[in-house]
Length: 108
Image: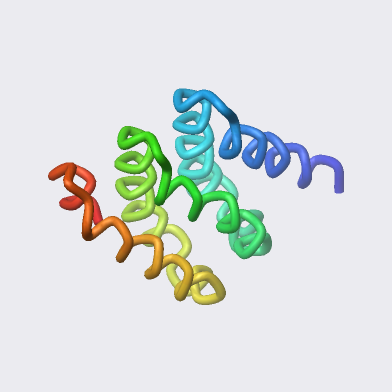
């Protein structure tokens, strides 16, 4: 069980870090885990997305843009595994449709 919690704890720590570069590492790690361990992600999807959805609304536009870009790739890996988090996910994406940054808006 420790092997299962280690990557998740690392992911949570990165996603809620103070430095925007570290939060971007967390977003990249989530994508990597979706590719390499989709079952781990889909089993813990609600907990993981509690952290990830915050990055979709991040105060730093680079983090926000990367999170939205990664989300489009995650959908391919998780498909129906996203069902439990679809409503907060749509809310997070919708909030970015008002973005003044054209790249963030386009990603949303």
